Length: 40
Image 1 (cartoon, one colour):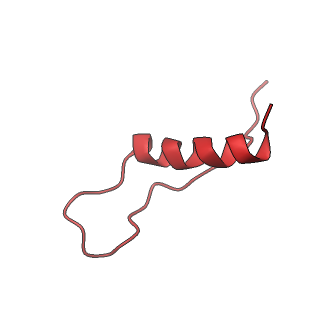
Image 2 (tube, rainbow, N blue to C red):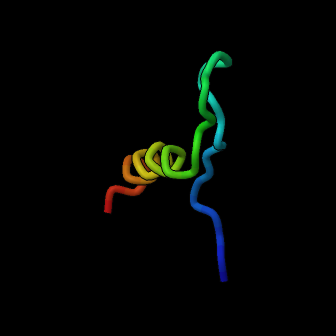
Image 3 (cartoon, helix red, strand yellow):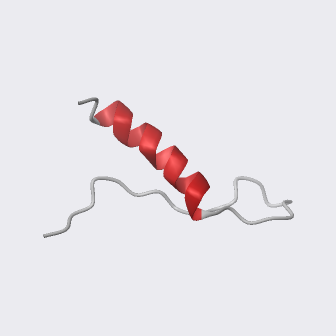
């Protein structure tokens, strides 16, 4: 069984960028959010 405990879009924060966002950066943002919501 699989369920989602959070999600984060892979997106650029600014429109004028030379490189696109990646899964690693999105995971870093998601990991902080998960740690804050589920501290144990």
